[in-house]
Length: 169
Image (cartoon, rainbow, N blue to C red; front, side):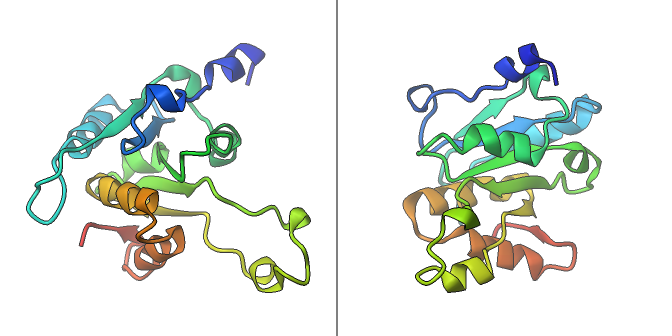
């Protein structure tokens, strides 16, 4: 990655992004038809009866092409209002269900943990990622933002499915 590409990989400031809008970053630009399908699914109303409008902030910039989860988390980790970010990567574009990668931005650095107080956490840190269909993004983001559920609960639900992909309830 060149220094110019690194500078272009910025996230919109909190004031530029609605807190309740899920953040989706496109990192694979090989299949525009698949990307269009992802966008269409992200724009569908959600909720038990589809009563909630879809709020999503999409970053569709070539500067993010090929960005890894670690690179995105390095940028997203500085945003105190962001608990999860969704990636539309190569797997997403090739998946029949267009499964996005959900990444938690909250992660404890084991070096900073008090070994006595955080012994259990340091021994088994929670999951950092899981796959989800685009239509579940809003439910995940809203519940994490409101603190109704935590990331590990969604990751556990995804891991319980045969294809390891979370779908709306």
